[in-house]
Length: 391
Image (cartoon, rainbow, N blue to C red; front, top):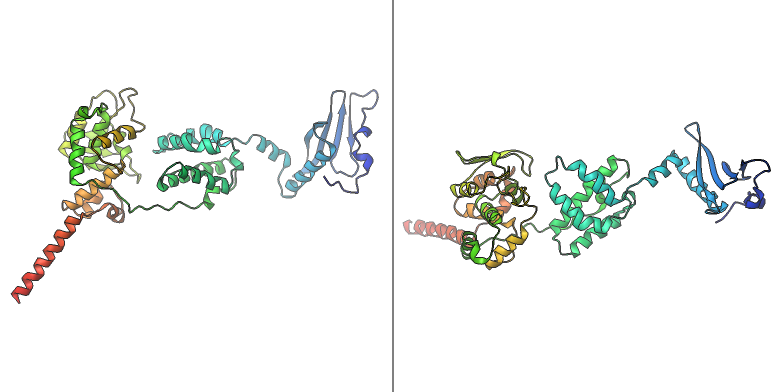
């Protein structure tokens, strides 16, 4: 390092700081370096820095000789002086840095326990953190994660085969994590705020045609013939087809939420954060009543008596048996909306069935089959022909 020419060479020679005879400890000032002290004892030689902060006298241990040299001690003082000039106490900042948690520790011991009582997406968040984020960011200090690191982590998730929509959910989760880190004063800015969302094509939706519906219905009615033995998940899939509710809403359904006499389901929490009543069809109600009543949850995992964390494996097995591909569980909700519109229901009715707060959102699900449009077009043409004949 470059040492100022104002510092005498003798001041940099550690041989000039012996322990005085008859003393067990002695403190030397270093000529030319304000605040630097060399504390010599019978056991060790320590570099110390004395300074003032907020009109109070403070001191910091810089390190022991020969673990660090006097040149390194001077370099540390130079760095700490920059903090001091900014109104930051170097000692407090050093202790804060030394206690800064890694990303893995922060999300496991601080973030997840804090959000578990109220965040409905907790299970999904925990899974995404465990499956994707800890592998990539886990060992990094929470205050050392930069914008390029976040961007790189999301790209890595995408390269694993995750959809852009799923990557954006992970991005939103990261933003929540870093916002909490700001609240705990580990960081001052959220690096996610400068990372763009991935482009989602929400217009690409998959619907079941009549033939696919027949094949799927055959598998769901007689799953044993197709070596599908998880009847609870089969019931969940049938329930999703009949109600158009979200996967998590169905899987978390409790007996106390359903009035089997009136056939009304009180959904206490949904994506919009509002409670709503869902009138169940006789078929949907029949599915509920066929479930074993052994715990608070209607579609409980028999091994844990808790809602399933994931049903994708059995769902994929069902689709394979029905010879259906390229459809997601959430597409069953799209399919419900499509069938409602094509059966003549208004967008207002479909909006209420799906629980959307805005009709604009419902229009995205209101897929109208080509046959329906063709029939409407034929009716208009017929009306025009009749008018022409009359004239």
